[in-house]
Image 1 (cartoon, rainbow, N blue to C red):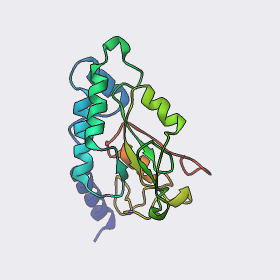
Image 2: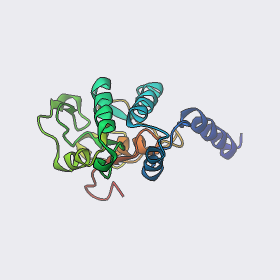
Image 3: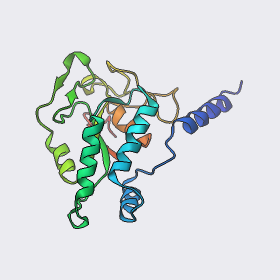
Image 4: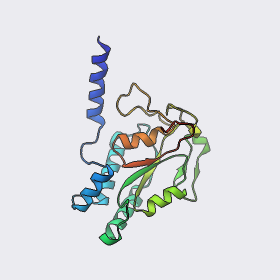
Length: 196
């Protein structure tokens, strides 16, 4: 067997069955779709949650904002007059699970460390204040001490383009949530170059 042909075919099949085809979540594209009235924050949330559910426990997400709370946030954004729209209005994002978001559990990739955050990290709060939609918390190497993204107490994530490869880390879930088209951007960390 020619390994190059085998893995190329496996990679193509993986992309075809695991890549969203319905909505372009790149920030510029999403802003354009909003401006032209082709979609709403509520539709974006429904798409994102549908993708997360469709993919199942694939090692990307540790927790997500409850469905109704996320839909309510989207409706609140939609109710704003266009003059009040903020720079990241309706743009979905994720946060690495070592960064607090009030009401969501923070684990740092270690189930035994889990606690419910009582405050939201300042950078995350500024994104929310700018109109962004926080979808949830993403997987990571435990305590951000790894470069491969698979040293986690949760489901091990795989590379977005080929399951035979590691996703990289320690912000593996953050990178995957973007590369799989589940969010527009993510907040991760970089301790010693791993995020680069």
